[in-house]
Length: 359
Ligand SMILES: *Cc1c(COP(=O)(O)O)cnc(C)c1O
Image 1 (cartoon, helix red, strand yellow):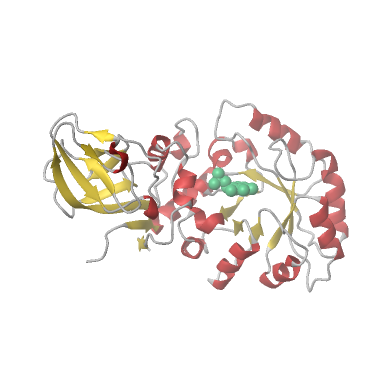
Image 2: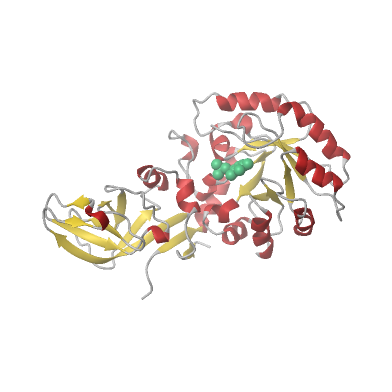
């Protein structure tokens, strides 16, 4: 029998989550963000499943765009950081991608290029994130230059990105919307990531750009009604491969960080940080064993974890274990591990087989 560790991908859940996004922003086009290998799920799989459900895709680099084109994706693909070198323009034209224009240099590369056909450009405006994009005071000038160069198509989209949309009480989002609304030229607009799509209807504009919510998770700092029906796409699963009794005072795992306070039953599960389970997960982190909650006991190893199943009945070798998925939200595990769900799926290594269900 093969090692039972898997990242199961429920493509039915993915399509359901897109329909949730569509219903919340019915007047906006939908750009599905599939950067970083679709947040670790597998870019070709996710984009392939969304090909007839999204209006465009977004990635972080030309290399990521090439993966999608190689997989037969024909929808538009936006490069969220634009180009890093002038020489990428030829490949960008060949792959027929959309360019983000963030700065003077990228604009000059475009103006000076000789291209077979104009490229669609998204002009990024920095409304307060202070990371990328033209200053609002320069945006009109950039827009006029894009309209003037024959290398940019006429359908320029102006866009911005929110720093704090996951917190409905944070005033920064309203401030960013006000700056964005203050731009005077009449290009199409885009601002909303998942959080703004879920919680800031004023920010939907012409294009929404959800990523995280499509994978079935809420980015919101507080529970939000619009996020309640999202369904997790990835379930990280494994199985018990050994069981042992541990006496009071004995320790479990590297460093002996967990010590039995009572006669205990410890289940060894074949999954570890080499499979994308976070090493930072401390003793007590919840794990589902045969659908019942149990707690991590001992440090996460590369290939194994150990779980206290003393209070569970009928746990045997082969019992199914869920590390996150239905019944155990990714975000809950991420909080235990002092990170966010985005990071947990995104750093899922190649070794973990992606198994598609509900194709
Ligand atoms: C990653 C990204 C998104 C998607 O963000 P989520 O929080 O995953 O929805 C949208 N826009 C830009 C510019 C991004 O970099």
